Length: 259
Ligand code: MN
Image 1 (cartoon, protein in one colour):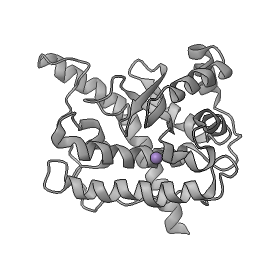
Image 2: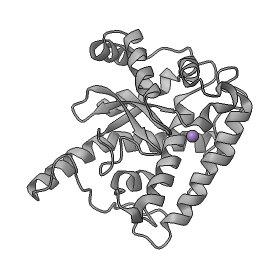
Image 3: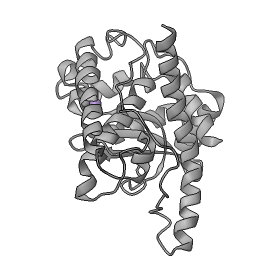
């Protein structure tokens, strides 16, 4: 139990810390790129100092597979976590072998991955591993807790109201054609924005994403995330998602991204 808690906390802190340093890294990289004549929108990060010495592993959900019922059913969670997420982890470990990314931490791969064909398998599986690790923590049994005061104020300022935020986020999630994700992010200007990404791309992918930012909410709208219970009714799944958003975690991510 202690080990489980430690691993969970470790993963959370890892992702949260990466998100915090991410916006700082963007600034540094943008400055470096500008001085080198490259576009500030496509910063190139230097190789990371950290070296990873163990394979990527599947993180635990942190709650029971049935705990999100009735919003997300047990079988979907089992298949989604134990098979889909696990496959991203396995394939990522395979894909990074003998590449420049072999000893990079997950966040370092995600930030540096390119749109080249050579990087495609790593891009898909590193994104898949990062996005799902983030998603399991974005949701929690019961949900129901509220955003922090600062995040509530930021949502109201940016979108007009909490309901208007939901409307816009729902539209983004519904609007993903095929497989992808909807995101609520903190941008480099420290303002909130909503975006979406295809496949397993995400807003941390500096060389891939059209809108760069630190995600604080991510919603998986691949059919595997909802099809068993909701079939083709993606809007019903999105509505259910609002019942299980872990606003405590989302608010902590917001505070960290704001520095
Ligand atoms: Mn998924």
